[in-house]
Image (cartoon, rainbow, N blue to C red):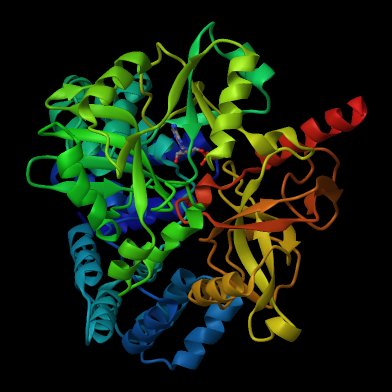
Length: 585
Ligand code: AMP
C-alpha cells in the first residue's frame, strides 16, 4: 500500500479532535489496508512497531534525525536546527526542508507502507558499532523518496512523537466498525486485547477470521495479560460500604509487580507496564521452576527486597540495584528478594480469569510451594472495620503499604480498574490523604551543594482527555545526595531542545525533558494557583491546582508509564476531600 494513503489520513487526523471523525478516518484507513499488512498498520497507529512487551524500540535520537534530514536535503545541520527551533517539531521541519528540495530535484519512486515498516524494523534491530551511521543511512534513503507530507510522518513515527489523538479505545471502535459493521462488537475485541496486549494480532484475526474467532480468543503463554487494577478507599468505613458482607484482605506489599509466564522450558517475567524484565531477575527464573507445580502457568506476584537474616521487607528502592548494568550478580547477592504470589491467571490449559477470586486463591495455594524465596501474600477473610483495622496494623508492622481488599466472587478483569479490588493505604488517613505520582517535565539547576545537578524539578500530572501533561508544582525537598545524583543521570538523557508539545506550563525551566519519568510526591495541601495548569478552570476560571510543600518520597516509579501518573481528576478529588476535611475540623 502506498504510504501516501496513510500519511494523508494521519494529516486529516491531526486536524481534528473529534472522536467520531477520528474513528471514521480510522475505519476508512482500515478498510483500505490489505489484510496482510493490517497488524503493522495498527502498530504504526499506536506509534510502535511491535507490541510493547517485545521491547522492540526505535531508539532514534533527535540529533540522528537531524543528520539524516541534512544528508538527504544537502542543507547544513544548523539550518535544520534553526527550523526545528522555530516550529518545535522535527516532523514538520523534515517536511519544510523537503518542500524546498522538491522544487529542484524530483523523485519518482513512491514509498510504500511495507517499505517504511521494514526500514523502521531494521533500524530498531540495529545495535553496536556503526549502527548510528547505518540508521542514519536508512532514514535518509527513506527521506530521499518521500514527499514532504510522508517525511513528516516518517519522522514522527521514528522519534515517537506521533500524536494522532487516538487512544487504543478509538482503534478498537474502528476495528469493530470496519470489520464487523457493529461498534458493539468492540467489547469482544477489547477482551482479546486485554488478554494478549497485542492489538496488531487482534486486528489481523478480526480482519481475516471475523468476530466469531475473536469470541474464542484464548490466553497464550508469553503474551502478557493486561493487569487488573484497584480503586482506592480512604478508610475502613468506606471499604465496608463498598464491599459485600465478607471479603478478602491481603497485605499490599511495596515492591514491583510481576507477571510470571512459565512452561517446562522457559520462564518470562513482565512488569506492570508489560515490559519484559526477565533479564533483571535470573534468581526468580531459577526459583519458580521449583516452586510452581505446573507445566504451564501465568501468575501474578509482588517482588519485594528482604533482609535475609530477619526476613523483614525492605524499601522498594532496593530493587533498583537490579537495573544497574554490569552489577547484576552483585545485586542478586547483596539485595536478596522474595516473590510474593497473589493471583493465578492460567495453568495447564485452564484459563482462570473467569473463576471467582476465592477459587483462584485456592488454586494458588495448591500450586505455589512456599519456601524462603517464593511465598503467598498473607490473606485473611474479613467482615468488619475491626478486622480490617487489625490486619492493616499487622501489614504496616511488617513493612507493607496497607491492604488490598478483594471481592470473593469477582473474576479477574484484565485491564480494568474497578471496585472489586480496593487499596487502603495508611497515609490515606492523614490530611491530604494520598501521595501523588507526578511526571518530571523540567528542572532548575541547583546551587551550593547541588551545583551542577538539578536542585528543583518541575512536575506535572497527566490529563487523559487531552493526552498532555499540565504542571502542578516545583519540588526541591525530599532529595538525598544519592537521589539527586541518580536523578541527574537519568534525566540528562531526556533533555529536549524545546518544551515538549504535550507539556502545558507557563513556567520557564532551565531545562525541559521528554515526559517519561514518574516520581512519588507527598504534599501538605492542594491550593488554587494562577500559575499551574493541572485542573485549569475546574474550580475557578483561570486557576489550576498547585501542591503546597511538596516533597519527594524517594520513590522513582519506574514501573509507571506517564499515562499511569496521577490525573487532574485525582487532584480534584483530593482537593475536594481536603475541603470537606477542613470543614469538619
Ligand atoms: P498502586 O500502584 O498504588 O496503584 O497499587 C497497586 C499495586 O499494588 C499493584 O500494581 C501491585 O504492584 C501492588 N500490590 C501489592 N500487594 C498486592 C496484592 N496483594 N494484590 C494486588 N496488588 C498488590
